[in-house]
Amino acid sequence: MPKIPSAIQLHKASRTLDLSYSSEHYSLSAELLRVHSPSAEVQGHGQPILQYGKQNVALLKIEPAGNYALKLTFDDGHDSGLYTWDYLYQLATRQAELWSDYLAQLEAAGKSRNPDESVVRLML
Image (cartoon, rainbow, N blue to C red; front, top):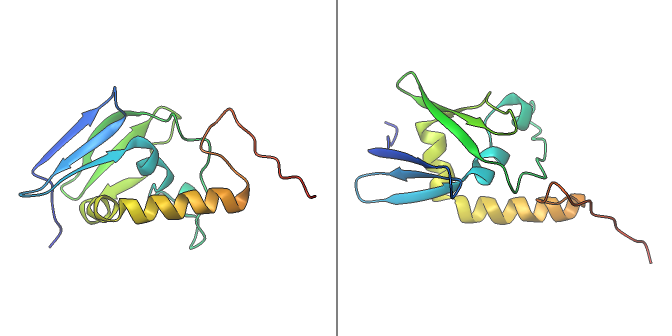
């Protein structure tokens, strides 16, 4: 049985989505939610596509998708991922690990969180 939040709150100013469960509370950044979107555009077909330049992305709105998920709309136009209750709980409880992995992937790919920055590697 999925863990369904008892309260969901979008904070546009801080770009966070708060999820409350009976005795647990989590705050997920819009950037984390965007780079880990469950959409085919991000997840690919078994080969995830690294998202970069999303440091300033914001959540515009959240909508229920039936009784099993949320549809999130981001200000970069992305709105195709359905975040199931199980997936949201997984993101919430594993966010430190997922964030660390994401930063390592960015560094390995020579990419940046900042949309206005390009990373150039010099071979010395």
